[in-house]
Length: 486
Image 1: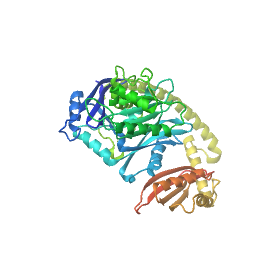
Image 2: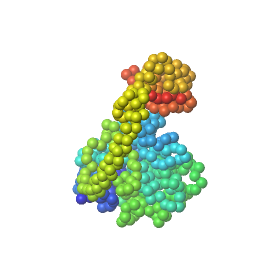
Image 3: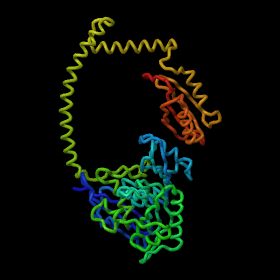
Image 4: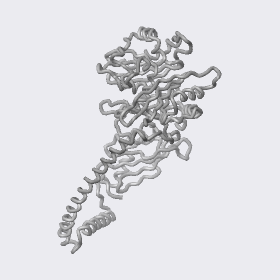
């Protein structure tokens, strides 16, 4: 039995969805569905229920938060480790938050590499907006495992099928209430993303009102001017409801002095076989499904984290039975191989123990190989402890010199105080209090720039019991310091 995945997008008075079936090695698009909100309905909950009646209950759902509810930043960070990115991104965004950090939900996704930096699109939204989105879906009986950003899902799809001509593209996803503008560079990396509150509106003959057209064109021009270092002008791709009105694409291309993209080179339906021109109308929904593709699935940004983390089930495990059987056979072969290796290693250990016993006999007397190693280690540890009591240091940096280096490294007017400083075998440990999260990041930056410290890590940063203060813990090692056991 295949696992059914539903990708949902809500815009104005309309709900669009793409339903796919996932087997252990493939993802097959089943249908594209659209449902309108009735005039007497206060929200989209009833339209969502009608849509589910057509598609059936999925095993997992992916939904999208509109770009008008969030703010985005493209960051270049000098590392790629996921744990370090999780720590650094909130600090990098704090000064841009237009509301208290406690009211924000921050998520990010890696979009590429540039020289020695990792390119990250970081997004923050108000918790109240995300809560309303989840409550609306809950009234229709839907609990999405992923809540992503609609324009970023579109960028993920576009990057997936990016043409081999290495050309830049400007994507305009124009729906009824909002329009998203995405600029892809020649490598397929999204360089800028923006959402404006302008769209087609309602009506049997969709058309852009002059005010809406001016807003969209102005937003696109500003983006192109801000990214004007690209030598090649981008080609224009129109998606969303506007894709069904060819004359709109031509008018927008003329207003922006851009060439419309050739669908032979930029085919949004290429990823999902059998999708015709509807791929452009349902582009955002298809983009959300790229996170479910077998093999190289796209990394979708997900707001379901922290207090909003998904705690439900994602459905039937039947598609993975064959995978589990193959994995089980591989594990059995691995255990046989490991067993043979263990037997050979035991023979080698026995020979080594005999040699250790003979080598240790002059110093320790007649002992077995296992006892010789244990007693030698205990003796070395005891001698180190006695030498430390006499003031002997095993590193190049005595504790007093470390404290002096710390004092010289941090500026005297920095709004941070060190409540407790400890130096032991593992290095330098600081418990401090700062004026803000940004100040904590500055403390780490000053230590990083100094040649006197290395391996600097903020292990904890949280709101202090003292008003408008942040308590933090930081670990570091003085340069030349030889870490010992604890």
